[in-house]
Length: 491
Ligand code: ADP
Image 1: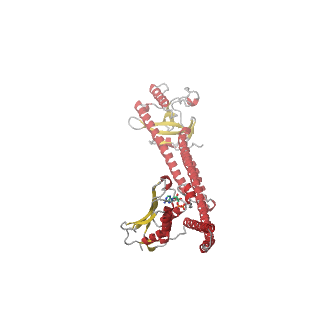
Image 2: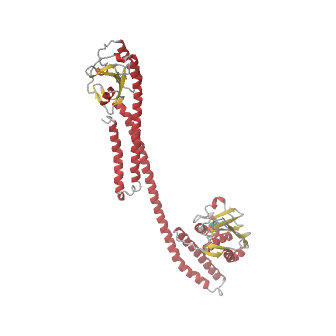
Image 3: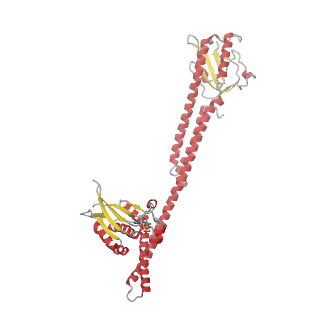
């Protein structure tokens, strides 16, 4: 019988959680065969232990709550019986005795008022020490309003009760007791509470018993087991599903990272291979003597020179970009003069600024001592890109460069370089995209001004490597100010 005793519940609870734990133990020990379980088997082993402890705790709690409630009823019934003079009823009492009938009626009223209880009765011991039933009312077990079978009829006073269970014997010894497992008699299968009845002098008069249908009693506990299993089961499945998803996601990320590396390596190798013949083309184009050429030939030579240079800078960008993606760039840490670095870049661009009819100047030189520590090649690369862009997108006014030195006590100084132009400007919504690879403010700029959209993405990665920040402030038609900073880690 599944409901026969509390121990049966512990048996099932232990069986279920125990097998779950055993499965996870095996999975853990043979984890090389269960890739997916590897990191979580131990966790689920502990999970089962905790779930077991909680279910167990709930069962004990429910049991003691039920029993305390019942002892509460039983004590109050016993008190009333003692007050009414139950001690006067014995195996000699006649069935028509008014006190006896009053007690029987009282039992019937209690039973009607408390459907959770199946039966209430009292027992005493005769002169020979045998247990007999004293007051036991008719009981409408099936609650159909009739006392039909022999089982539902009133038990005659003095009927001997053979084979009393341990809890009943305990109650006769003066202790309130509850049965620990289901027992059966001619009326049914029960779980019962027995409490001693006292006479007016406080001596043992007999016992008062309350029966519960074993099935109903254990159903409460079954329900708790069932709900606990359901709850922990659902939680378990939820964990597994989300871990499975997480697992798939991280596998996908690893794959994506691999693919990214393959792509970067491929790009780096290809760019490298393309660069060699391209340098040959550029070299030859530069060496070609243009003195005897007619206009059309000169134009073609110009196209050859500018196209090959553009191609080289694009290839260089791709090479840098893939090296940055593959974490292959190592920065230098040397001392360099930031002012003269900027001067040299500006003189490099001065011709193209002149051709466009715009100014190009170094506005602000606050540094009496402009020695910075870092990687001058990369600082130059960033500045060439920002100043080149500024000139490219400016047709009126001009471009100015400023440098600020930021000092925080206890920290390495930072340099902030600002490149301000009065060019076409950039819409706010486009500004955040600029620093992402292959992205340009507006697709139409590609057509008009060319470019790969890699320059600023490379700058951003380089600036981050230098422990600085890069950003832009801009307003369409009014111009832009690009700035970047880097930490000057003085040796
Ligand atoms: P590209 O090689 O295409 O110039 P960048 O990453 O250097 O790539 O620049 C990305 C885009 O940012 C440009 O195409 C342009 O739309 C915008 N941009 C950059 N600098 C400026 C600037 N000074 N003024 C206006 N737009 C700019």
